[in-house]
Length: 535
Image (cartoon, rainbow, N blue to C red; front, side, top):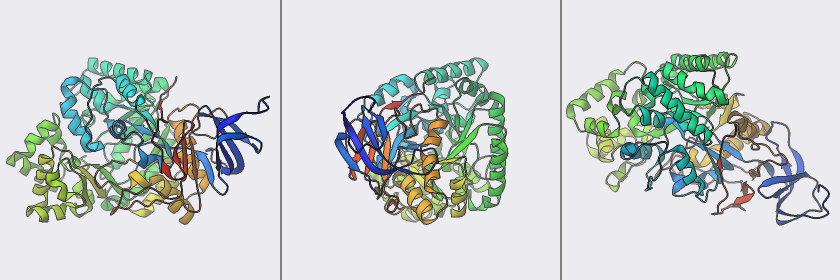
């Protein structure tokens, strides 16, 4: 190879059906890995390696990229992140929904820990960083299983400059936020995320977001957005997102794109038409997980005003009987523009996934109606009690949609898969099963899309959206992030009843040239890197 008579490769994958990640049909080939990169592709029958994998009858693909992940905190405690590597995921994109671990100011660490625990799960970690650069360095020092890429989080940036109050940012504050965003990008952030149902992101006006995202336009990076409404007001919400892109010029990547609530199903066709129209005018893409239920922090059931000023003030309001009555009225009557989870999902379809303490461990896995009966109280009062006693560190799963919509979204050319998985005592099964579920159920069984297209959506497409250099394709010189699976047996095994189950049919996963899943067993060694944007 290249003039040398002999080379002992690190890994030699033989006889596999290779899918390059570009959407084209598979081809039988050998692949050699050396020094963390793909060293050769072709007929390598005379080559030798320290490790040979016979991939006959198996698919060999670029490693999957999870474009919406909540591994920000768990990566510091369980850095192998086995729930992802066992799905074939080799890169997790963290910093989602405008909330991550950095940047953060000292005076906000305690309150922000509560916010992040509700979104990421409860892990005891010493927060010994402040800037994005310091946090990424801390991640880089971990023995990571998958790679991690980081989105600069709007909420953290706004908190560092404006605080947690619900007020407009001044012109000077917007400039400071732009500087913080640019600093994060120069240290490797692959975009900016925001979650416009979560404080303090939801305090930002359309014009404020447009001004901040002008920094993204300079680097060609996307705004990754949980839009202001995914339910009743979704059409107006999409219009706002398009206007932001018009004003700033930045690409848009919609997070977990969907229509929430069976009562809003009639909006689905109009939503998809609006998406098509937007794609003719702006650069737009989106991700979604292959399930009809979502998962987030349980505190989203509370009206927006409850969160003003941060978690501690929200807890004080939960302890106030008068404020509680106002919460009940607003949940019952609604607030224009607010995605009211109880209204669009129903209390019988919202279940608790984790809590902070043993005191309320008995509510995990139960829906709000069941929790009310368990406590002998009105379901809302019981829910408020749990949030108060657990200091808001509570997760939920909400069943909101229709399978036919999942399939239409999955097949859409602008879509790529994600997990959006939040770990906890009883998590959503997507945190263990999203990618194999697509390959097994939707490709092999339902034939919603073909295998080359599905692989492209999991690999080359997201690498392109997030400007990941030398990743996402099986190509000589590219980083050796590789997934090997059996197209005939790959399937998810995680269920809502028993979610913590690894997938079947993915025997080998390679990250940066190292095996992180070997013959189905999870390898705990440093393999992953922090994937940084390079200008």
